[in-house]
Image (tube, rainbow, N blue to C red):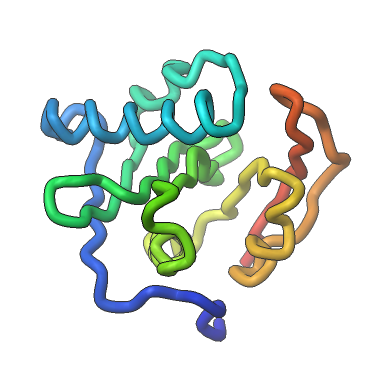
Length: 153
């Protein structure tokens, strides 16, 4: 697969199951998710939704010094696939390719799994750079249009 535009190389990505995440890192991850998804996007929703705890989950993040600046979570689907969600980058670190690095590594980490996600519709083209295709009708969630997408190999 060709390298997507804006892919940041040379960043260190940490992967962990939920129970192995250090408390301070978990705090930073949840703070980042809240800062972007709840405050910046003005969505009142339950971010801590139980999916962080699912067996077989994987959490990935990029750190800049002591600050976690980008994050992604992956968890198994009932059909054997893997769902990617909560892809987020701190406003101070956008356009540096951190989210692209996380996505590329997730695609490589699960080489045989069918990957699915619900993209914010304005980001459809961005996810298409990784091979994702639209897989259903757009839907409104928390006043933001989302598009189901799938990467089948």
